[in-house]
Image: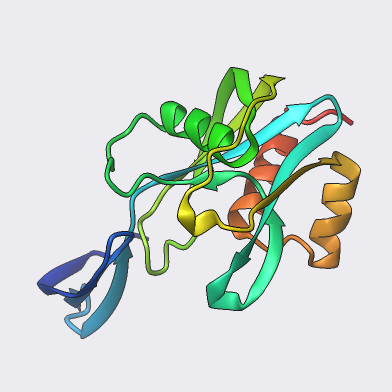
Length: 182
């Protein structure tokens, strides 16, 4: 059953370079009113860079959770919200790992947090990789980048060493589609 919700009023409560937060006052189908806090962010790309049974991951300090975790190379462009996701994926892979992909295959889209955000994660599998130089953004200071076997990655997910929802969901999506060896 689909429940329609009508927006009665919307106001921006915060904005910076990476996001906008708004509050929407709504009326539900029952007539009851409510409030939604919505984070607006540009869509982003997450890339499973594969070489045989190896996958390339990156690790960086994530300030909101005060920890460093391994995750897929991923990112968005703040100044180009309508960029082609494949172009974005290729650029983010090169920026964070130094690798260029001879083949960049889209395998699906995810909503990482649709309870409060409509941001889409475009998931790609990158193969036929060629090594090059990384070109990190200032926000990526200290980013580490290295290869793991798929078995190591799976163990890291189970052990809680990988906790990024996009990384775990993209891994599951690729596994379900038979895109991962083994």
